[in-house]
Length: 218
Image (cartoon, rainbow, N blue to C red; front, top):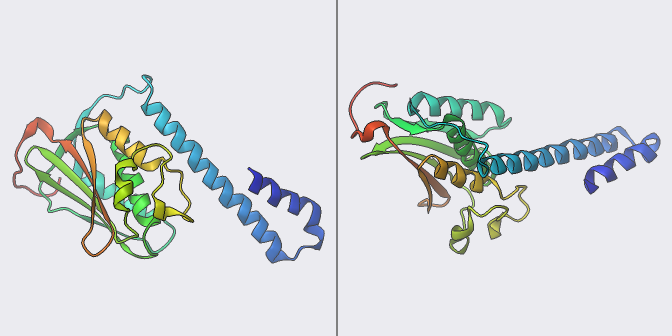
C-alpha cells in the first residue's frame, strides 16, 4: 500500500513536470503492486476457505488425462511469456477420486512456482502416470531448487525458502497445495531433480483402486 500511495502521490504532485517515461513507470508500479496484493488476498481467501467447514465439496471420479492437458494449455496461455509448459502422458486412462476445483488449484500453484523460480523460457513438465492404486501427477522444473534445510517447512503458511529472496511471492502457494491434497485424501512430496531443479509429486487414489490398464487417451 505504501508503494502504491507513493507512486500515486508522485503522479498527483509532479505529473506536470514529468516526462512520459516517468509517468509510465509510476503507473506500472501501481499496476504491478496492485496485482501482487490481489494475489495475496486471493491466496489468503483460498487457504481460509479450505480451513473452514463452509467448503464441503464432494469427491468425484473423473479422468485425469484431458483434465491436466487442459490445465497445461490454459496455464501456457496466461504466462504472457516464453514459458515452456509440456504435458507428458502415455494415453492410458487414469481415473482418480478428487475435487476438480481443488486439484486444479493445486496443479496451477505448482506450475506457477515452477515458472517463477526457473530461468525465463526454461522447460517445465507436467506428467501423469498410474502407480498401483495411485494416480501420480508430477511438476518438474529446472529452476533454483530448494535448500534441503527448508524442505520441512515448505507447506507452512507464509514460509519462503532462503534462496527465494528478491523473487515476488506470498509463501502461501504450497500451503494451499498441501491443504487441497489433504482434503482429497492424497499427499504431496518434493524431491531434487538430477541436474538441478525440483520435482513436486501429487498422489491421489484411483477410482476403485484398479491397477493400470491399456487403452487410448481418455
